Length: 212
Length: 199
Image (cartoon, rainbow over all chains, first blue to last red; front, side):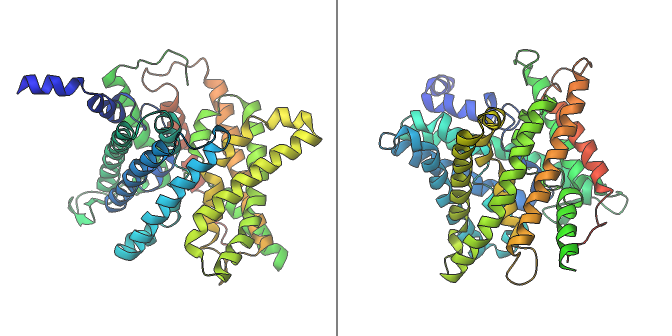
């Protein structure tokens, strides 16, 4: 068992996955894509839907960018990447409208804003544009998962403390004074700062001092 | 009445519904480019300019899409308009004002992926009466959002310049402390919520 595990740890797939989820976690390592991190995390349900959409777009846009990487001239590659991403976001939007109209309504413009989520552009440009299809798929899923873990953790704290509910169901009783501030914008900033602080303290900040 | 409404849209976008502190858009460049007031002013100016004009352009693009019943293509259409506009502005500025080009040049490509730009065009669709904002209202909304974003990034850069010598706990340095400052700024902006209600 441990032998298989050790061998698994040596594969490219594992290393790419680990990098995406932890070592290069988009949110607390690279501080990318935090616009939607902050905007949708006041309710868990919305956050989970948003994360699913993001993983979908990230994985497929990585695969597509990777598959086309030899055919796209360098000068126009950015616009091609944006168009690929936009196409997948449209798919997500149409699916949401069809199957989860209420959530789609609440997320509103933020679904469209997945297009400009820096993580997706960052992975397309930084990984998929120079790697084969397989690892790009793993990288896309891994970064999406790493992003989702942080988002769901933040949403958990914000919804629980802000409204005393989880997924809309009452968890904390009437004795809990709802911290309204937590579901409002400042709460998002404070919780994200706390997450970054904890993660960096735990992992030991390996960034050179003074770097942004 | 008309002009008053335009002003209300402008100030509401800049203050009560600050695109950065209340809508969380444009965070990435906000955190990355807020270390010096000078660069913050440069990027802020470019964002105001691009936001105001892409909002107007996208009003027309959206009307065109509605006319042909192609509304689901709006994401692609908007992002193309934004990218093309930014590219166009870059070429024009380079040709006519090299000084401005060197001041804004490096920031312009960044703006294409600044979510605030796409965000304004998308939020705009849910505002105003039936048919959404007209070109003038869109201009006020775009410019107001840009000014709000610029105010926030300049304030942040000013605070971060002062904080250069402060002792910040390890792990909270850089983005961590910037987010806490942004949170406090957002608290201040909540005080303005509801003051202005655009018709």
